[in-house]
Length: 481
Image (tube, rainbow, N blue to C red):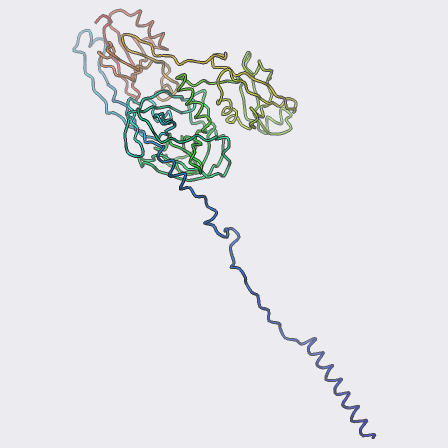
């Protein structure tokens, strides 16, 4: 009995010891666990969309519906005449000689805006052109007639004798948003019907490209590739609607290097309507001298925020002063459209004609105040300005030269021959487009001055001037010959 108890005790001790050993081993000496990770979706880089092809816009509809409304414009400047004639040759010699210069050609693009053949393009495309040819997308060719041009906005209106033309529909350029996709359609490097794509990079850009003193620049900036020959072509949205006219590129090489600029469609519509109806753009003015608001202006004038356009000076008796606007007011909106730059202000005002009323909100003492302003014309009143017709002298017609011609040719004054007819000028060998700078060594400031000089001249007349291609020439003829 005693031996049985000893055996049982020993067995229990062994069992307890075994359990203790097993517990200690599993507690302190367990091997590494194996973990299985199941990947349900493939790994992707965070900067790539899950399905990048599905996020790109379909631009085929816009491209196919816009190329037919964009035309190729070719222009030619007839060669001028260089003459060795002088007064002594006329009186005692054989009249000297005249040598015709080689014609010069240029090219650009245009946009059909009416089914009866009205086409809008850039002024710099057709400036000083003697002949304008318009080639449609289907390769038909027409002779173009210049209806009118506006150097201030670099726009021109051309008409061809055609009907049932494909038309690009205007869209409201104010509704364009940054980052919105657009297409540039034109004829770069004479490659017809070329389409490039990009996004709207900025709005209201003033790049100072126009030499005109009353220039209006509020360009749409895009990264759609535009090159020489695209000028005058279309900038369209994804619906194939016209939102701008391509005009310029930012480049140090002459070719596209990143950004291009287009005139907003709302400005284009206004200019085209004026040229059709009046032959001249009706420029509405606030009669103020303005600057962008920056940190210095805000600090020196105690402005609570950097916004709007600062009025440095209000012209006495002008539209703004008559409405109650004062020096140092800050324009923050026009007709509900926010204004944050001089280019944006010029764009909004340029949509109107003299006599139109606009609501201008200004900040004065950091409080907003609305004013109803009646816009005025360049003469200071609200009348419509009619285009001056050419003056007829000796059977030829003349107009004063534009600021653009003065800048381009490096001259200060002069009158330009627009039509020769059967005139003494034509008989002397002068060609259309010739700019008369002096008559009998007296400078010609305008058409009235030219008339006065001719009227007071006796015997032979010495005419000195320059052709649009830069060739200087002079001619002599007799008044009674």
